[in-house]
Image (cartoon, rainbow, N blue to C red; front, top):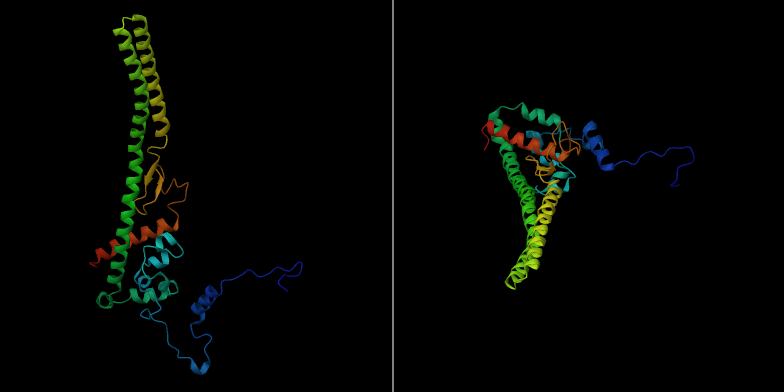
Length: 253
């Protein structure tokens, strides 16, 4: 029956692929192979199904797994999705002399991949900066547009005063001048209020230089109301940028 009997708790659903991978890690990939066919071959970091970027020290495929936006920067995502990320294999690789690491070329391959996606992320940072600074510029433009609307009404009153003056109607002339001054005062008050309202959000946003995300201007790792700095995207991009510098210090370019 699809329904568990009353009082009996149904076992939680499991991801069979993840469960199988866990068993592989604990018991080896030959756990289901007939005894007479077991090769006894030990997994090695050079195996085709091992993520070499993880072995080297930083796999963006592992860091950005299931993050569609960031995976979009990466080639061959489907190929790497089922690759093995094994800490024991990483330690074996790290124990190699640098000459052997250079011969394998894994560090260089990682450097090429990582610097390529960092360049794409930097382009996102620049675009976000333009978006934030563009909002500041748009405030002045919108205030000037509002001021222009008021000014057209003021100009109409001043033309009317000139017409009245030319006709010798002093009272009408003075009345139009007074009306124009009232409009001018109202314009200044209205534009100042409008600018204050728009400026409530000006300067309230900043760009994260690591991810290119637009965040609160007062956000820090200590003051992280939106959990940006604890998120997978920030942690991933920070690790990638740090690892690129590590490789460069080793002379990998």
